Length: 475
Image (tube, rainbow, N blue to C red; front, side, top):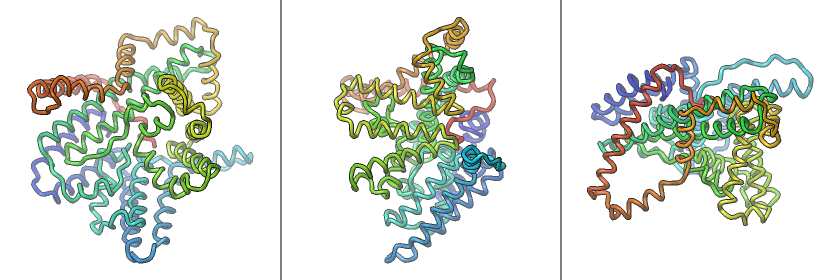
């Protein structure tokens, strides 16, 4: 069951939301959300729901163990939490990659373990681990009520693909929150916006990207390669930011307020700015729980450079058990170091800096999308040297340029622009900055009408299709 499936939209979500709304007790509401979240996860992972419950029990007990002696840092408890959490990731996510790499390097033929990847394991593992670390640091008190920790880790809106929520940001909301009509309306509109990003834009871009990336390199030329790369960068952005919008919107409907996970990353002026805007919850997680403990930028330039490369190695590895992801992470880390230590990168005009940033991001995502490093390198070569355009390669590109694709591509480009600040300034001029003015109310009403129309359109698009997975489910 996923957010962009008809069973979720037409049965599961309405049933849970209506029950939640009529139940007066917060304690009972939390219990309902726990049951709903476990059912939601078990629908797709009937066995691995036990793994998620084990994770919640483990980290609940480790946090209590850490907090047992406040005068002395209980490093043993923290070490147990870190080793077991990362050990689960190593076994379920990276065992196959590690054995395959050993075989390739040594020439051995060790059997490669075929372990099904629990969906969302990277997300709920990082959330659980951040809770124990924050208790160790004294940032948050250890929670004695296990079911609050279970709700924190299993809450279905952001369970499978983020954003990564820190316990300190949600602890008070688990204990006390309100649900009102204004939050429900805003949350529903945000949810529909995310659904439209996924169903209308990301799926359309993904169809073209899948066709082009499935071709052998000999069938590609520069036009088709660039079209496939452009389709994929929009697919991954609208797929993942769409999920984040849906999670934030659903959370708001139930009274929770999550932090933003994207802030117009494709409008970034440089790579450092890009990582302040892209997958914010992950970048801040690595910054707080890996970069700073390694020493950050406090131990000289060589150590700072090494720390950043370690962080981006781990960032790439976090995304999947393939060396393409690792190279993608190191690619980003290398350009961050160039911006830090090569003066010319700091002096680029904003327009030129944005072009350079999108070029780096696009090339990086080609490697990210490729099934192998060899294919990724060959694909990039076609982008920059494939000037011999055959009839077949030109036909491949033209076949993707359907009227619907071109329309969604235009919407994707417009939607990536940081228009919200401009819209806020325009509203201030037209409506005097008052949220109570009649024109403002009319615009808001119009937006809700558009949201309802968008929901209907998405349902129509989903009706003939089946499973609609999000890209980040596999992470």
